[in-house]
Image (cartoon, rainbow, N blue to C red; front, side, top):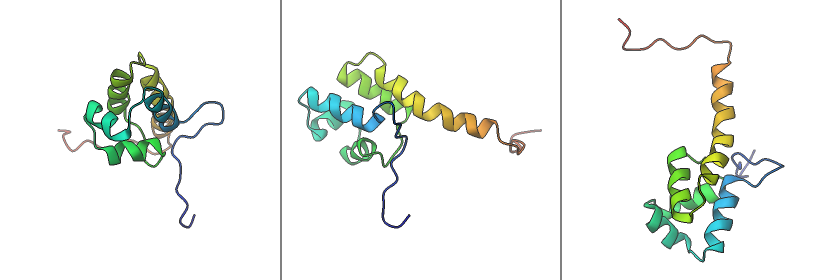
Length: 103
């Protein structure tokens, strides 16, 4: 892949999570620094999410929803990105790893 950055979760039919967060943040007149302060996250971390370099977590999405007043829209968008990855792991042919806490 060389030096190209891999964008996480880009779908053809809807904006990426990061694109949507940036659009909403800018629509509300918030700088990344101000948004990060309100969301209680590091601006560098949120920048990576906006640029598709880090995947969103449900916790980050929920906090962004709260700050941006989007009523769960970002959690739903993040879930669309997170759930398919979980399903791929659940349906693999290999058995689950044994628990280190098993008796």
